[in-house]
Length: 234
Image 1: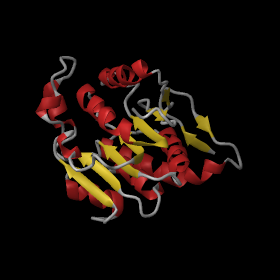
Image 2 (image 1 turned 90 degrees about the horizontal axis):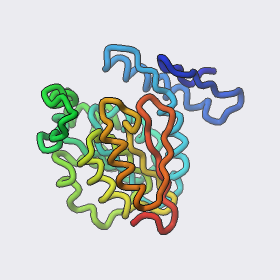
Image 3 (image 1 turned 180 degrees about the vertical axis):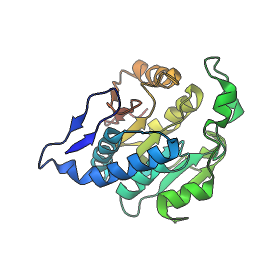
Image 4 (image 1 turned 90 degrees about the vertical axis):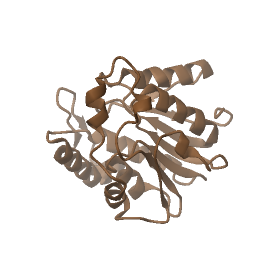
């Protein structure tokens, strides 16, 4: 059964009996949501299957969940459905699009980027993720990293960074990496994106000097994954 067949890429098939065949309903839901909201076909099922695998890896670890760059809550809804019961899930976004302070890279079409992620709201995202406000879903609304305030003593086992641009990605890694639970997973989206080459640049600039290798998934825009081994989160 086909898990994903992105345009202009190689289809990926899960064999009969594969344990993640059970992920296919969530794959179909994700593809339908992304396609409807984009107005064109978005076939990115490998992202969902790989995310399920990563979420299952950390399920029994101590720590909380976080997503930075929640937009309309599509990916956050995947995380929410798979997270450990009782664990807090923090979602960070302006819920108004990019902040002007992050649009200084001269490779960006600034006028286009200002509107790119503005079509959202906190209410919409919370409804999409958890059916509305929930005590385990904690929104942090505003400019990151200012919105990290009060979380210095938290530990995280799963962090999804989808901030696109170099400075917020770097800030996210600086704040979350030292707070990762051993065995925890941090993901950074857009690491193969032609539109946001600064994403991979920021990831490599952070991890390479630390001697840490990243693994980039074969999803549509290349999600980088790093597993925090004991002693690495510093």
